Image 1 (cartoon, rainbow, N blue to C red):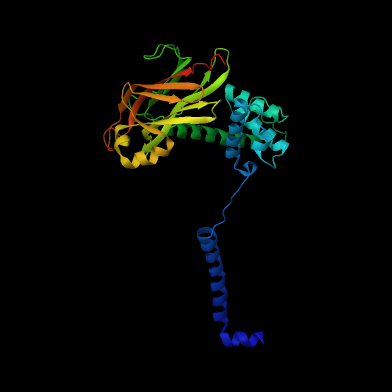
Image 2: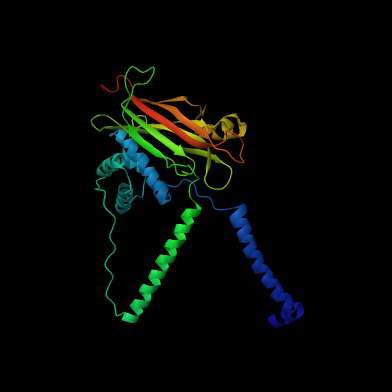
Length: 333
């Protein structure tokens, strides 16, 4: 019966039908399953997130717990966290965190009956002795030498090709001695200066705000918000100036814009969700305020870059001073 059907339809026709069916299934699966009706994950628990986002979520929980020790951290973490997974994630975060972050993470770990502490880099185990012949060892060492020399020469040429523009200087960000500010009755409890120069594509300094006794109150800083154009280095047209208050558990942000970005309706609309827009001008002051902290940021120096982009559209250099005060009544509390 099957042979009769094959003879009636034709072997080539049947093969073509089978191939067409297989190709149709594959194309339908790719088109419908991935483009038209893709799988969408919803209501994921924190433990199901990507490792990087799990660390971000634990950092937020640690900040919240630092502000209120009565919080139910187990409820905030959600379900299905294993002890080993929490221990491993917190230990990884502690190993790459600063002093203030380490203290918060250790407090969270203690609340979860865990112990974490900063550790140095793990040393690789010594190589096992094997029966490699001296001739093979010489060949391997020669190959390694060639790779090291060749790789070093390549990196040297690559770095020369990506050198900073002539006259550019590295960015500098540092804590400075507090000085009196106009309109302020007292000197700030902390003062910082952040300097950006064209070519620093990872400009994102942050500073801890602490009392004289070392109690952590919050953080402030400035970072790249938006760049325009293409190619390296980034042509930064706007920066974010921000303040985090541990007692407020939120971050207040304002966007410091170039003249071009400030007057471009499209860019202003795009950056509006990040914070209130402020036009960058020499001497311009930006005020940020939370529940217990105030930060004033002042533009000390600024210089626009030149090139094929619109005039006054990106920064060649920007120096911003940030000063922090604890609100009246909070210091006594």
